[in-house]
Length: 130
View 1 (cartoon, rainbow, N blue to C red):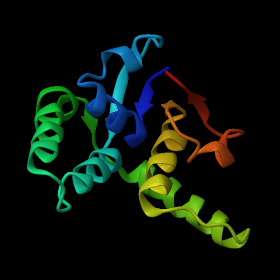
View 2 (view 1 turned 60 degrees about the horizontal axis):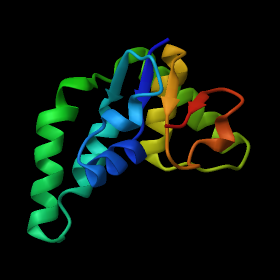
View 3 (view 1 turned 45 degrees about the vertical axis):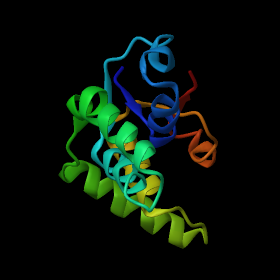
C-alpha cells in the first residue's frame, strides 16, 4: 500500500537533515501529497533565519520534490465530502490537513505522521509513525 508523507515528517526530516531514518521502518512506496509540499514551502517563507530557510529549501530540492504527487479530481471530490461532513458534525480541520486527509482517503493509502493532527480520522486513515 502506498504511504503518503505528512508535513510533520518533512519538518522532522529537515531538522534531522534527511528523511531516510523516518521512512526506514515502512515499505512504501512513498509520496508527498501536493498540499504537504505547499504547507512545507509556506513554512520556509516567513521571516526566519536565512540559514534555516536555505536548509529547508535545499532538502526540499534534493529529497522531497521528486516525491510530490499531484492533487487530482478524486482527491478534490473527497475533500469536498470531508469538508461537508466536518461542517455537518460541527467539527473543523485546517485546510492543509483536510486536503492531505482527503488525498489519503480517496486513494485508500496510509499516512506517515509524527504528530496527532489526524488522530480524529484514525478510524478512516491508517496512521503510521516512524
